[in-house]
Amino acid sequence: RVNERLRVVGISPLQRDEFIALRLYLGPMYWKINAAIRRVISHNPGQEVRTRDFEELGGNPYKTTIHVTSSAVVRLSKLQTRNSVVYTGFANGRLPDMFWREPEGGGPCGGTELVFRGT
View 1 (cartoon, one colour):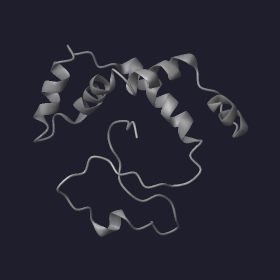
View 2 (cartoon, one colour):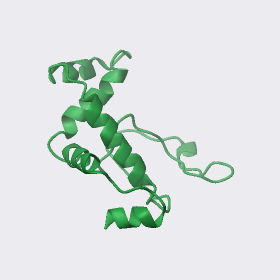
View 3 (spheres, helix red, strand yellow):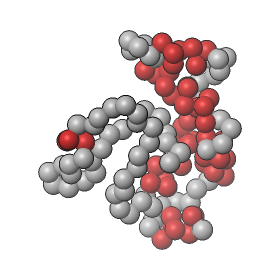
View 4 (cartoon, rainbow, N blue to C red):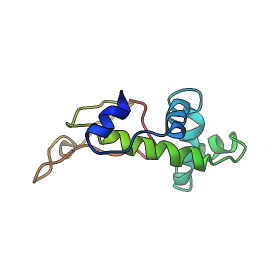
């Protein structure tokens, strides 16, 4: 079904390895893949816990899995036809007003996360 929808919009279908990578990410490997990605920012002050998380992985950066997962996410993002609100794990804080305003000329508003989201 998804591959047919991709074909309709002129995008090549998901490959088997992309499907497997997505399944791993959305299942048992979520924590490990995110820890590997977040290690990139572990040198910033206050991010030491991310280094410890990565060390628990035995130093495996999961480069191929992350690359293939990213490829699948980019491909599937072409099926998103409208902006939508997504709330995820933000506690005890307040986002600035500009976060909610649509930029001049249109387009999405909001923020970014360094890792993939299973939302």
